[in-house]
Length: 427
Image (cartoon, rainbow, N blue to C red; front, side, top):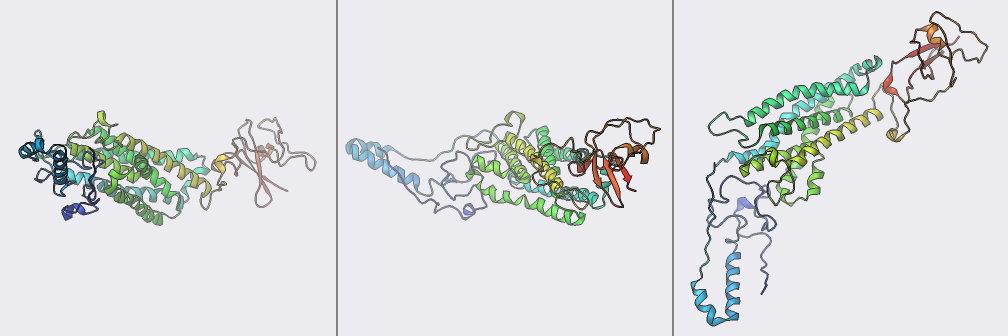
């Protein structure tokens, strides 16, 4: 015999505090898809509730109705045999035994507030990074360094390495404060491995630096960029406040999509660390790829991978925006430049394939009109020395009747300013 009991989707007798939508363990439904609550504490579940607590199978009358229906079915099959048997049956509730545990309510604060604490800690750092990078652009220091031959990738690598080294020291001390026991009550993260916590914060630091680089690519004024950068950085955390109460309802694809925002990915990772602390095991290298419960399908290893992916994504966005919108003094590339043919060997506009062998002391510049005196690199020796080696030259007309001969095209290689330039006056 099979039967169905249909009760109200929303329990009617749940306490008001458990009906709040901000409580992820609330009794908004029967939680039939979950075996464990989202946030756990060491110790027996609902230890102070005599009726078993969430989701309220006893207080909603589900057990009583199920027991009554079962008795009726037994009587309908054999009333005579069922009568004495049913008089001896009692239905009672009893808890499973639980081993010794340390009751730590502070774990709830870790599970709920650790992501917010980390975001607030890195917000000031993020706006400082944005301001420093944009201030260099605003003072035209970046253009001066390019004129001296500094490559673009080396410039960004120097910025990244400087901030990464500074923040690594801060992250180390934050890890010490989190994981070192300074009182008999235990540490902030009592059970977690300090090295894994350090790696998690370090990966988040990388994502924060690249996120700040991406924001800096959209601004040309330092003060405006700092204010907007801090605001955008904190606002990128707000989607997590919407996802957190519904974490157990999200699919794996939705969690991964949300983690494309680095602050949301960090909040997810901090939440998982808090959940492992509540479980009593802490996050360890041995459970890095494991979910907290069998109901979940998300692990801290996935969070670390997504943070690294976010770092690469933000770096690509910064690189693209700087190339397409370089600012007042840059040469913008077309929006589809990354699909164009490689321009490592620029096209020659005049005197293609000319060869001129000369000694350093020679000063010849003779020939009839149109002979190519101006468009040949001989004028490099006449108006400025160059190294005696082979080069590809590009021609562009300058001001005051001059011809600029450069070894790099200003259109296809704008970042190679100042490599070798020859000025040939026209008389």
